[in-house]
Image (cartoon, rainbow, N blue to C red; front, side):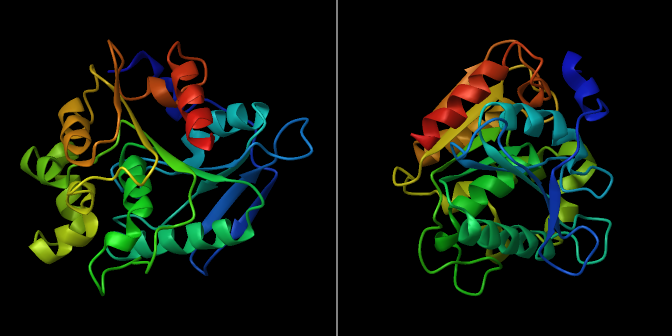
Length: 260
């Protein structure tokens, strides 16, 4: 278990305001303004993890959001309906993320970067590849989304592996509801990135001591997509989202790199 797991309960300053993108209680986005800056360097949209389950929400990202705001970014932490809630899981979770991102991108006056952790890493990479979703799939776009790039932290980027390994007691199976090829073709980053994703600015950070999401999932996606995988020696699942951890500067550098 990561020494930084206390990030899940560590208090941090709340958002400057909250934006609603739908009628459900969890269809909201928390917003932070950049500290001491007239114009933000970028808008960093944070997608939290927790294996898509209702018991895990966006609050554990607050320390990271505050740290990013202190670095001059506008920050948005997206909540979405999750398994165990009405409308949660596929397709509702995908629809929520797509709706929230479309709204944020339409309103943004700066480059938009997605920063996803764990299951949020899955959702962030999926969101960057929405134009590759087969026709009729939830969240599909007719053209690539207007993103500067994506940083995935310990992302669940290979759904076949998540299913085969029964990660987090069957979380992927509950999230997807079925394992049909049609469902996976519209949901799995590995499938969406088949043939390469050199036209997308993707950076993967993954600890080689991650016990929640094995680094093999990141390696598989990197091999298929061509996205750079930065393996973090001795790092577990939670250190990358902890701004007090020794590895946080790697996260900060990755965000700055995709902003350009």
